[in-house]
Amino acid sequence: MAARNGHYHNHVKKIPLFPLLSLLCFASIFLVLSLSRKTSSNPLLSHQTFQFGQSPVPDPNVALGGSCDYSDGAWIYDHQPRPARYDGSCKEIFKGWNCITNNKSNGWELTKWRWKPRRCDLPLFDPVYFLEKYRNTNIGFVGDSLNRNMFISLFCTLKRVSSKVKKWRPAGADRGFTFLNYNLTIAYHRTNLLARYGRWSANANGGVLESLGFKEGFRLDVDVPEGTWAGAPAFHDILIFNTGHWWWAPSKFDPVKSPMLFFKKDHPVIPPIPPDVGLDMVLKHMVLFIKKNLQPGAIKFFRTQSPRHFEGGDWNEGGTCQRLQPLSPEQVEGLFSLKNNGTNVEARLVNRHLKKALKRSGFHILDITHMSEFRADAHPSTSGGKKHHDCMHWCLPGITDTWNDLFMEHLNNIKFRD
Image 1 (cartoon, helix red, strand yellow):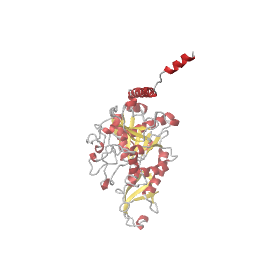
Image 2 (cartoon, one colour; image 1 turned 90 degrees about the vertical axis):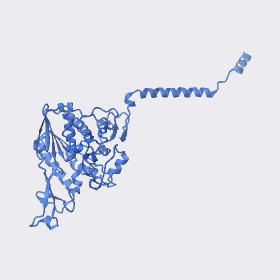
Image 3 (cartoon, helix red, strand yellow; image 1 turned 60 degrees about the vertical axis):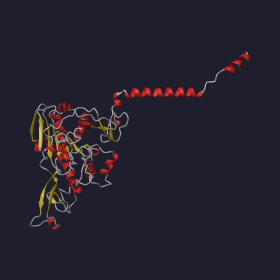
Image 4 (cartoon, one colour; image 1 turned 30 degrees about the vertical axis):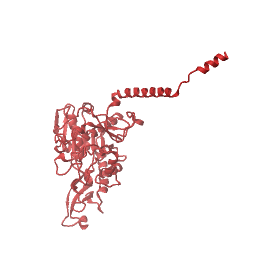
């Protein structure tokens, strides 16, 4: 046996290691390729998108802790977008904002971008659902032309599915519409500063301001709401306020030739105060006025500041906005950082004042600023028909449609909790 075993061991063939390792490598590669094919066959995973902003984390559909920061997300370009909620044929669109009709090169492309929050989803606006749910409701937009931008977006979206409309001006509104099949009214109340203001000239008999050398300017009563919206809180069930653009507008309120002169209780505020301090006073008094006059059960929103995208100077200094793609996060900081104190710093400055004034006020904040900062491509620019680039207002259809997506989501959450 011993000899036989020895003979056996002498004739056993040794298996080389190299072919064995090659076989294992081949099997591993085959397994990886197989998994890759399965992944690419999934249409949800293979759908191609371009993202600008912060990339969403994996599995972002459920918000942590039951809440969501909708301002933290990315713009995603959808190569197979849903049909546009409306088009340039909506007659309420202000001519200068109708980028499709005005043949802006990326007019249609704007409808293909959607905002994707990192940790949740932002559902698209459902006009039929909205009309049904908010039947017998009055909704008022109170603010400057950027709130009109948002108001028109909502009107055109609803008009596409419900054409029986009555046009009128409820509670002093600049314009308003009632969707007769649902008794749902939406209205826009134009006010640039929220407070009442008008031209002021020195009195020949003199006065406190005259003694300080003021000859003309704009009188602004911090404790008196502008008449265009004073009746809105008692009329509407839902209100969306904004202010900001006119407070940093030296071309309209020149600090030397035509300064803002603030009054309280019909007397000038002495010593005279700068516009940013005046804004704080106005916000304080308007919040109190709204609280006092708001009808029971009404819901009030304040929209944060809409950013401008002038590059190379302000609107009256040759500034332009010719981009055709959203900005990167680095470009956003370059344009809007308070440290840089650039042309477009207004948005974040205004938001500081809003945050301070609205704390514990009962207002729901509609935060559209950061998502909008990326969209330098979404302004009318030269297609607006003005002598200068319009880098402040937004194309319609466009980004204010997303604002209304956010508005509906917040509103539904509030109604659900209540």
